[in-house]
Amino acid sequence: MDIERPRGHSDLLQLRGAGVDVVTDMAGEWSRTGGGAVDVDVDLGRGRIVTDIADGAAAADLTRLIGLSAASGFRKAAKGCLAPHHQGSVVARLLDDVPVATVISGYALTRELSAEQQLRLGGRGALARADYCAGFAAGGTMMTGVARDGAPPLVIGPQAPDLVRVGAGWHPMSELRPGSMRRIRRIDVSVVDDAELSVDAMFRDTYVNAAGIETVVHEYGTDVLVDSRTLTVQRLTVTPRVLPWPECPGAVAGAQRLVGRKVTEIERLVGSDFHGVGSCTHLNDLLRSLGDVSPLAVLLPGPDNSSAHV
Image (cartoon, rainbow, N blue to C red):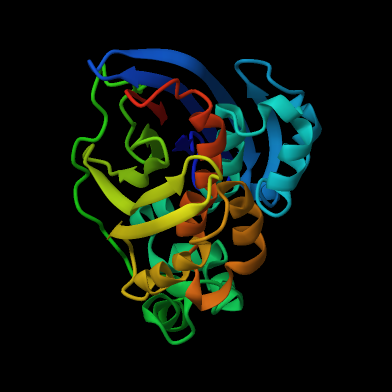
């Protein structure tokens, strides 16, 4: 999902998302089995209100979301727009990313505006969210900076290594313009044997500076072993690759609560139980995406195939 501000820092936010489902055989040949796209315009000046929205495949009437917040309550409202057979689709996953894409768009401000300018845009509002997640821990690095300066400390992540390989099942992606951000995610499901599925999932958030250099803001990966018959999580390992604050990895251990639970339960469990300083908003997004293992597993015809949901 591309995150762009074509008219400045406090007006129009444009979110442009796309994805595909593919199946890959043992020879490395892949075939597309599904896909979708979502375009969302958000008015930041009016409190993150959705002003326009459409999906390229016309999978749902999303016009009911116009006028609603792109943050609080958006996911529930978006889910209500989708027919049962579109739950777990690419469009559903893209809609799920709208709230967090809206939130992380603020990272561009920390790279492009001074602390004084950020303060005028409501920088100290973050103080009201102390202990919201591991990175927002009261007394932690971020909150200390906000209390002192009115804005978070400047964080510049590592330069983004290549991730997308042409011909490997990824859909086409344009080069990001300076000042833009992107969330890119992947979930691969493959057959281990008659009893187990292997899941390799990740996401990466990046920002492109004025010189055209793309750096990583957040990146997590997770490896999961799932019972192929019951779709129960047997083993789960989370790898925090790039995170902005030293407190952020404190959320990783909490993911073990999903071991022994069905992937079809994960979205509900994360929504109800994964809150506070033992959680991470972005890790929660990755964990919720494991619910897509269920529809992806249906695409697996045998032990010599794997599916990628990009």
